[in-house]
Image (cartoon, rainbow, N blue to C red; front, side, top):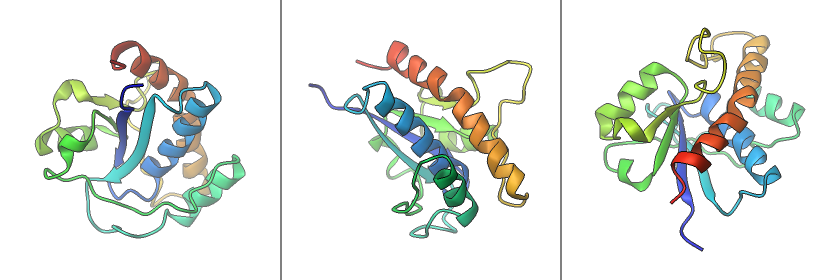
Length: 159
């Protein structure tokens, strides 16, 4: 078996959206028998929360959905470690631009919400400053795009 494809979910601080995306898509991949095909992690473009846990509201939302962020520790994606990853999944267009500025090739950077109605905004809004409903909305966006993302990865990125 070849090495798994290394997929990194990226948001700003790696405590809200990207860790939730990581566990949502990982669970979907496990359900489809694709655990050996991919290695999923998440990171932030900023360093404010490095080493910290997931936001309690994200962790609570994950638990509500039968997922766990208990072992999550925030990490930062930098120019130094950009080459460690095959594919980046950006939570919003700011993260997409930041990843490319760090050295990711544009074709390596996918948008998390690229797999639903194109009339909708392409970003998963940051729920950090919003109420609990923002975390439910983020979860639904991630869940609604998880299968499309996996299909895209399987079709266009599996060696």
